[in-house]
Length: 391
Image (cartoon, rainbow, N blue to C red; front, side, top):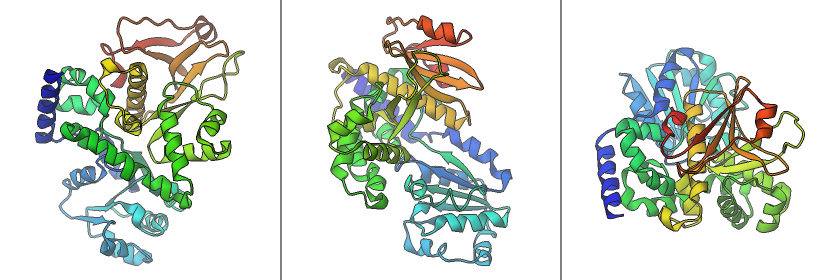
């Protein structure tokens, strides 16, 4: 364990000295010519502001507004189209950080989008940006929206190597991939506990004056114990002590806050398939473990399979988002308990994935699945062969 900790510190120092390039940056740069407002949404502390600063280096005339600053916010509130044009047009890049702080920001962005300026307008916001429908309703058609997540394993491997990141898998499974956790591993526990307690719930608790914060926190803990399992809203309601409708509303809220995400069950109306089930994963393993205050090493845990599955599914979500893949992700299960961890449907072609941490664990595709979907591909993902799955 001492050797592993020394190696972890070595890798972290190397990453602090080298800028970790975000895969999303290339995709953003390719969108410049579309003359639309580019929005980058994501949870707090994942590097949105850092990415903005990196993008800004491409221009000589750059204006950055930090909307945590009241003076900067005032520049965007209650402005006419002419005022906004005069504010934005003189610059190569006009960057708005933490835009959810601006009242009626959706209307402001609509007005900027309607100007069709040559200026590259890039906006970042936490999930509350989306929660209040501040952008999506007023500015439909004027925006290109992207999501930024915690670091991905390929991003880290591009800085170090696949070999080094392979050695770091246990650390990633336990502490996750938030930038500060990766670059300062000696403070990982404190960083994650602070993140969970002071940031991740903030948007959800503030949204429409949420009245039962204890129930929300209890729900998140219950979900953390059910990674990879089909969840029942009725059972969660009994566990948390609130009604089923509120459970569903809270889960929608947590998903918009980039704390969790859902997979629906895959079915093409074949007999015996579960059609309305849901599995829930955490966007980041470290957040999941912080919710449970459980950072024990893998050899002392009974949830290693859950952590491996959560890491791989969340990494696939990042991979698809950054490469603008519109493949749909599902799980598959039958009423007689045959199951597949992940089904990816890309243009009608199905790929089935099973996740096994131990490379010696075998998995066979259920005969009923192959019978009904004979052209599908089946792949077992373990710690020795996962890199192609993420590329």
